[in-house]
Structures are given as C-alpha cells and as structure tokens.
Image (cartoon, rainbow, N blue to C red):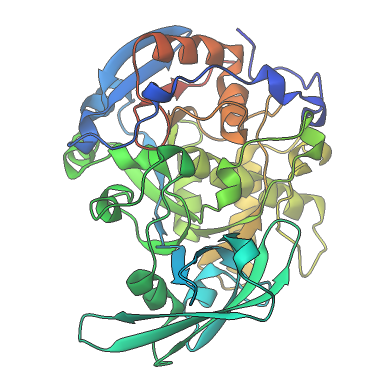
Length: 421
C-alpha cells in the first residue's frame, strides 16, 4: 500500500488521469436513495482491512471524544426552465454569481435582479440579447414574473442577467419558487418532489450549493444521538459546492485541468475546536469538508510565510500546496496563525475561496478519517480518496463493485482511516 505521508515523488501536474479509472456498471449507479437514510451500507477501511456495516452504526467505528466535521451548505434549486414562444425549452443552470458580488450569500440576497454564471441547455435556441420569461404563482397567490437575458458567452459558461417582479423577493426566493433541484446528470431522471428533501442533508443550513455534499445524506438524528452518546462532537464548516467539483477530468495530465473556485465560510470557534482535536481524532464527512479544513491549513501557511502583509490574500489556488514552502509549518501553527489573524481584525468568521486540488502526492495535514461516497472514475474526488489512503483505493472500489454496493450521490459509502505514519 502506498504510504500517504511519504515524500512527494511526482508533482500532481504530471499525474495521468487514466491511472484513476475503473469500470462502473450502469446498474450500480443509485437512481434513488434508500427509504431510510441511515440504512445505506458502510464499507469500513482500517489498516488495510475491509469490513462492512451500515451508517446507523457508524459511531461504533469512531474513537470516543473525537470530532466529526460536516459541511452544512444547502443546495439551491439551481435549474430554471424557460419556454420560448416556439415551445422550445431553454434550461438555465445557475452555477455561481458574477464577480461583482463578495460571496454567494450576498448574491442570493439581491433583489430585483442579479448577474449569474450559468450553463445553458438548448443554448443554440437562445441568442445574445434575447430575453426569456416565465411566470409562477407563489404560496399567497402572488404572481412572480422572472426574466433571463443572455449577456455574454464565457470560456465554460454563459453570463446571464436574471430579473423579476415584484422586486422585493430575493434571488434565493426566486430559485426556491421557480427552480428545480439540480440532480447530477448521471442519475438520469428528472427531479421529483421527494428529492427536495432527500438531496439535502438534515443539517443543511446556508444556501449556496448546486450539488449536495452527498456523504452527509446518510446521517439522521438517530445517528447523531449515537455519536453524542460516545462523546463525539460535531462541528460545521460551509463550502458551497459548485458543478466543477464533480466535473470529470478530460485532460490527459492534471496540469491541464482547471479546478473551479468555491466559497468557504468557517467560524473562529470551529477553527479553535479543530485545533483542540489535532492530537486526538478528527473525521471529516465528505470531500468538501476535507478540502475546507485542508484549505484552512494553507491559509495559515500563507499568513506565516508573509507576516508583514497588512492585507493578505487568503485565496487558495489549485497548486498552492505543491509550491509553497511549508515544510516546517505544523497544522497547529497554521491554525493558530489563522485565529490570531481573525482576532486582530475583529472577525468571528473566515470567508474565502479555494481551488485546492488534493491528489496523490499531497500530504494530508488535519483529518484522520474520511466519510465519503463512491465517486466517478477519472474525477478529482477519486484523486482525493487516492491521496488519502494510497493505492488501496483500487482494492476498496473493487470490493464495492464485487459486493454490489450502490455508487455515486444516492448510493452507499465508506469510512476510510488514514494510514498510520
């Protein structure tokens, strides 16, 4: 098994995505969730050994008085369907706000109009400058008129102005009333009423994602009760999941793959809690939670490497971990630096963006275990799993395939313990 903590032998830019693939039979892709969230199967990998259980019993596999971290982002109904006068349907998939907004929350609170980066289904049927319109009737029988105006074509998306009347509604309201839950394309069905609840974690709080942090879909109040009985604390970070997170890698080498930036929001008290558990045990629920806490480390590194910078740029770029000199900076030092920065600036929370790519060659700094679903072949999520546990990812996925585990967003999942160094 590849050692996770070994020295970097190859820059991840030189990784070939062809080495991170497997054959996923269509029948093993879960189209629907199980009736009970916590009845999903759980593959447990520890010290090279694989065992099986269900999510309802996950607490039995975790150390007492440890910490679990969850991503409390909330999925927005990001798909807007407009019908042209010809009857043709144009789908506007709202990916992320325009660059003029400080963060997603600010953009979602806009009234009257907003500019958004979108994917367009049926783009050939919609010309620049043309306006599409739809009307919806909301709970109090009030009618909302929503318009979409094509502004410009960008490299991987379209810039669209969305406006509405009455203007007192926020854009979050518009998406809620007029939008459709954005199920991943591999589920191959239209969203149903039940998906509004089931494609959302029970602890979803802060709206902003266009895809669910799916590892958390298996957790129920009963599971949290079992965790708390064992003295396992829960903490919450926010990473608003963009469509780019799940985009398959299409370039042969990773150096040509572009990671989209995603907003993160973490409180000072959460960072303090993580700091207190560094020498105990930390489990992150989902790849997004892992990318968030690892991004916190690199933000602290940037502060320590530039101590005199009055206005530090805490944005984490795709290749930062492989090019910053952080050899002598521990996780505790980095998190302490972050806390001091927040205190100096009178801040209770940290809001920043990250494009962090975790791939083989990356040395994990904070989590000891990862809860995650089974991911698509040739995806950055699979690269993250391979970075976390080494080449044994193949053994785990082969076992799951041979034993009829259900794959992807509505499927089963696994609890992976990092190799001891």
